[in-house]
Image 1: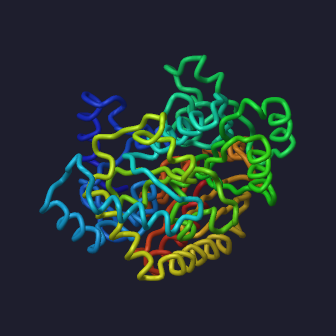
Image 2: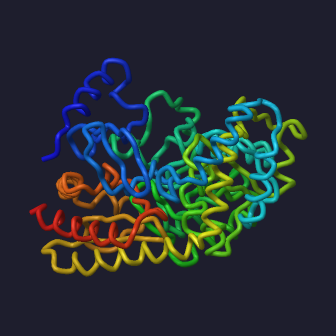
Image 3: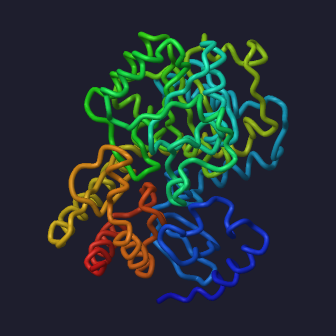
Length: 429
């Protein structure tokens, strides 16, 4: 067992001043039992805690660290930008260049607006969709998490699932009534809903690859059905690619599938590790935003020069290094090693992966939606998590989260991780 003296002391102190001792619920380790460790520094594929234990990290600050921790191009970009100012509140060249890059890379984007978080991006996209269509109803899918805005905390994923309260207290019933929820991958219920309410639906929002209730995939034809139904009924299709954007391909899931949404929400990778978000889409829709249109949205720190400089440096370095090919190689190596090692286990496992994103379920049979995920063996996951952590591999402290591989992970890291994970799984029974 590794020393945790300083982490335990910090957590005790944090709980006196911060609700639950953490500033985001999933960090509290509630779904795996025990208390979190406190980070001191991170570099490349590793993170060190305050007790000087180090771990191969597959959380990657929950997705943004696609080059690894503290990559030199990003650090230099932040340093150079900060020499001029840490913030302007005035238009700056970095935000224009970021907007141009995003529109060049992501198929659905003709215009884009920068914000400060994924939650802000999805919230603003929904307001815009309602303003553009003149309709109120929103459709989302069970298990898809789109941030903590009121109308989206209905049958959500991520930390809301981890804490067993998918419907948050403090969300007015009248707000929740405007959000219609469906199981993911259920084409019949989707057709029935549009038949009944199609002329009142402003938008459908989804993670095209759900990654906040574990990681699972749309069945063949499901995304096309969504595109066809929304077009036919005059509703907008919103892809939340905050997690998948620049992770699975340069242009996200929409590049891989050929399905182009009306609006897209982005975040994480585009800030290089600093707070960021963005939403964009068709020009005629985006032109409804103030100051040109009647839909109001604003942000003091939107387009912050440090975040824009960091994100531009990260995205350019990713492309320069042939990042998506390398990430696929690393992801494939991890997946193949785990599949081979888990084949001998006396209990069923399911491994899902797309590019540098992956998830492990202790579960028998296919996983297509939230109900399938919730039938997985949570107790076995708890044991697996701690066995891995104590052996120096840090996976997300919840079975409802996704793992992330970075460009800084080496094949040696992957081999070590596979060996640790296989041994950890064997020791769960």
